[in-house]
Each structure stands twice: as structure tokens, then as C-alpha cells.
Image (cartoon, rainbow, N blue to C red; front, side, top):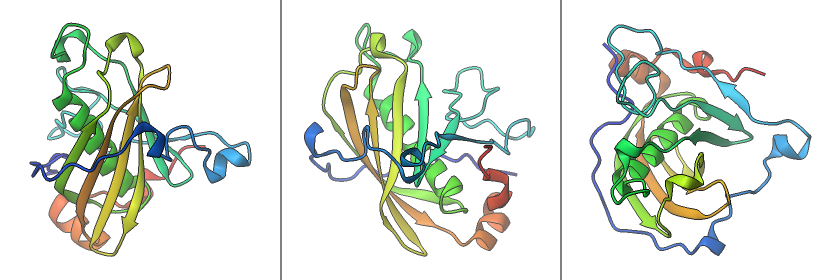
Length: 196
């Protein structure tokens, strides 16, 4: 049956970005400039008996329960921090931030590219402590590079006040839709069509 959207990671070299260099955070999308807001991306895996993804299964009791929206060519999620996922008291663990970034990047592959892939490399630069009191966090993914067999997705995670907590670069092996359907039980691009 379906494999988890977030496979094992290979951590690579960090990419250094200062908060001022991040162009995706707060920028308006093509849809937003026309007055359209984010559109909800349905989760076609929800309710499947073999579906237990830590990142996006709404029924996983220990999971992050992420939901997604698409705005232009960006995928966005808002996530409320939890005390059981802290490192230092009141600070969300860096590994959880990396997982949030990887999951939203994977949903970029689903919702924007219309297929599935596997994480090849994940690199995170932490800019500020992710204070739980800054929740809900905004997680935003946009492509830096897209190709038929690979994609480089940049993800930013910010707090409610706009504080940039981290920037991640996620390199993906991207499969054709036919291969994704055969190997990963991908339900097809139409299953991720945003709800207006």
C-alpha cells in the first residue's frame, strides 16, 4: 500500500540565507494579486486503512496533522506548536521544523507538479528559536528549480509575528505520474485539485 510521503532524509550542506534574503515570506502570489486567496488542497489519503503519515494523516494521534493550501505556485500550511514537540521549554524542536519543511515540500510536488517524489537531501538553516507562543507557524514552499526528474523546493517557517525561524532546501527525486501511481499508490494529480 501507500508509503509515507516523508521518506528517510539525507542531511546535506546548509544553505545560508539571512531573513532579508528570503523572498517568499509575505510575497503576494499571482492569485493573491487578483484578489484570490489560498485554496484548500484535499488530502486523498485520509481515511485509507494503511495511511499513517506522521506529517499529514489527520487521524495519526502523535502526528502533525498538517493541512495544505495552494496560492499561485506556493503550498502553504499553518501549524500550531505543541508542548510535546519542544526541545527547550517553549521552543519547538529543530527536528520538528525540519519535518514540517519536508512535508510541505512533498505536498508541493503533489499539488503543484501533480506527481510524487522522494526526498534526496534536506538542508535547514535556523535563524531564530521557534517560540511556541508565536503559533500558529506559517510553513510556505515554493520551487527554486523544477525538472522532469528532480525539484529543489525552498521552504520558510515563520511565526505569527513574521519572525523567520528557518529556511530549508529540499531536493527531491520526482517521478512521472505513471511511475508514482505504480510504485507509491499515488492517486493522480486530479485528487489534489484545490477546492475553490
